[in-house]
Length: 396
Image (tube, rainbow, N blue to C red; front, top):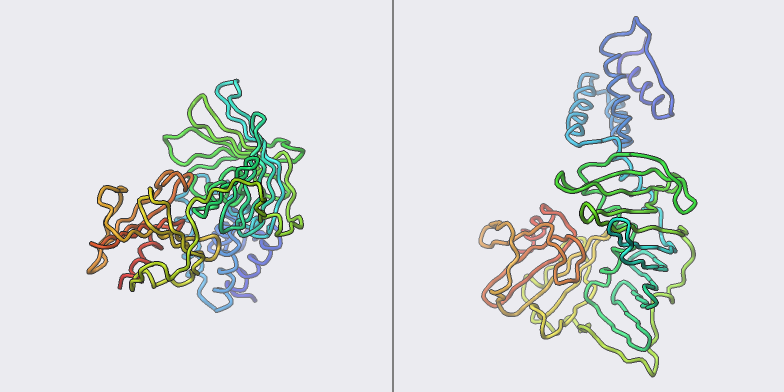
């Protein structure tokens, strides 16, 4: 006769195979409760939980311990509203991890009531990591923006601007990854309907980032789990609708599309410039690069900028740290934040800073460290705890 561990293991195997196992009326009450709990966990779409449960069983842990672990997991997950619909964010993220490139035609409409204020068309080629070629068309004007992930070319006829500061800043309009990242911050996600958009069958979700904000909407392709349309309500009577009228996943894109050859009659303006790393005065702190990050390049900023230099660091999974360095104290520049003591040093951590330097569109996190002869501001998409851990590592 099978013991309880073997029975629970078999039940999990059946559920993972898509079956709906049941127990007869004579079965042990504890087993019935465990089966019901496992089914609830499965509804969360958490395959990692199910596999972990199976592993614990195979290691001959007691059924009571298994049940306790499941119940603790459920209690934690119950803290999140609309937990079943939050699965779509996980599905989007998983689908995007399989994407290396995409081609899209995007329509962006700004609307007040029933009146269309503006309409923009963007034709974009995108390739990981953060390479893009985008043609913007609005009211008869055309602007092309090209980035190789290091710098951005903005081309208006014969006028060409080359800039190294945050070449990703234009991606908020059409970067699928940014859409997914923003959805992670939603506190409330609810499926409301199913509709056909751009010839694709989609599920429609409403979402918001705080209880004080109006709901926004997003349309997710049922087949690819990619966002096809997003509607952001800026207030009760105004909204911006961003729609992929065409989206091709993983087309072949030659890297030559992400470079621009300056022509003899082009009028070129350089905003900031890339310089060798040894141009900056080195200190022990500046020379310490956080584990898991690589130096991309060093930029000398324009004279009217608050800071003198920008050191760009890149990590895995689109993580980045932009380190702004001034060789003087910027006492007149302040960002409100939390002061954290790290032994003999302190840092100021600021979360959700909006449109910093008009370069980082949307919300971003920062950490600042100052001494008498140096001012360092790190701009990053790392979370608060990651920022503190890295700061402690560098300042120790």
